[in-house]
Amino acid sequence: MRERGALVAPVEGWNQLDRERSEIEILGELAEEEGDEATLNEALGKTDALAEALKQAEFQRMLSGETDPNNAIVTINAGAGGTEAQDWSEMLLRMYLRWAERRSFKAEVMDVQAGDEAGIKSSAFTVQGAYAYGYLKSESGVHRLVRISPFDANARRHTSFASVFVSPEIDDNIKLEINESDLRIDTYRSSGAGGQHVNKTDSAVRMTHLPTGIVVSCQNERSQQKNRKMAMKILRSRLYELELQKKQVVIDQQLSEQRDIEWGSQIRSYVLQPYQKVKDHRTGHEEGNVTGILDGDLDRLMQAYLLSR
Image 1 (tube, rainbow, N blue to C red):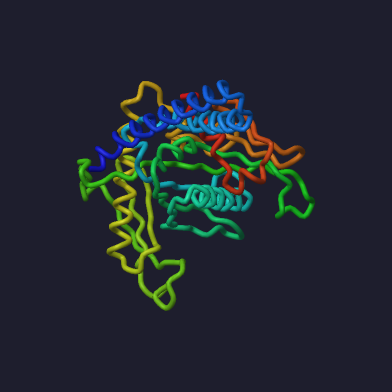
Image 2: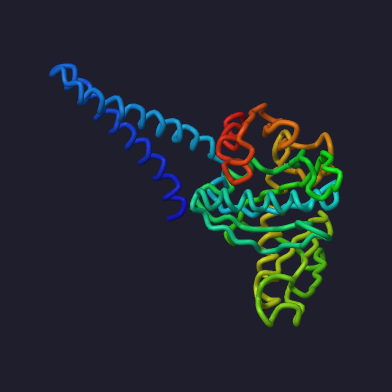
């Protein structure tokens, strides 16, 4: 049923656009025959709306990958820059959570490792919604921030880096063998919300896949068993994404964790000082509303990247 729905929805969408086109043609003909300016204006208004809908439908065709309709699992890791980078990682986490909220997607934070002084060292969260992975896959890579540091008493300009890795959530129908002998599983006390349960039991789970070096962790559930199950789900997703990328002719920025999280490897720069601009280095697309983008207004940047592919 899920596969059928994925096939039927775009066909019905295009048929609806075609019906709207026919209605506009009829309105235009009536306006011309009767010299009715009001009907003409109505037809023009519908034409503008149809043009925008057509633009969105054509963009939707870009999300045609096997796992594009799936939910997404996102991890963020602070890079070079110390406290600055950890604060930047927290800003990125907020940005993506606000983006999900704007699209009425459900986002759930599964793990957050607090920074030494401020911000976060790493985080992992899921985004549930139609084509969540299709959109968010454009965000995999190193993100660079340039600003006047709020942690520098001399108010100097600093550059910070953080990496974002996005993988599709996969269901149990996809066979992916993981040997228990390839895993190292560590438990520790959760540092998140949870009342009296927090810091009294080793419920948080960190799972390392030894052959690939992939590390995932989860601490948002109350029991170790549930956190272990969620960590395994994330690991399966990451390994599946890795296998997909091995089949590609060109390995692109989605393998951002294999790059150094520092200068020269960034996919996007967010400049707050001495001017304000966000630039995607893969497409050359630029945006001037940095505040809006950091508040989750990412669609134009995502679309520019996906269309360029």
